[in-house]
Length: 133
Image (tube, rainbow, N blue to C red):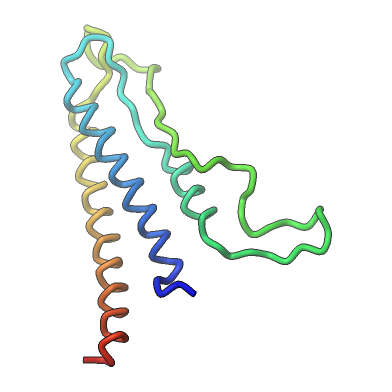
């Protein structure tokens, strides 16, 4: 029996994905003047699939042809994609600072929202443990 709800695990993975996004955008910004550096981004769909697959909503299958609730074919690894199709600067670098700063701000808002939800869940557990006091 787990004291923590399964949604807390999903939020933990969402925070991990957000942390990875923060690192990737920070690396892009740090390499804005590096010649031939190509911008990178986290594949959000892969991160979402990973988070959704780790939920333990299981199905009871009586036949192998039945569909399961989880996507068993996807991998549990979040992909980092390199954008090598564009060229923003003359030195071969394609980091656009405006895009990177906007994505960084958006990721920060998302991280704060998930952190608020985690705090709410933990405060609810604390309230239950303390008898509502």
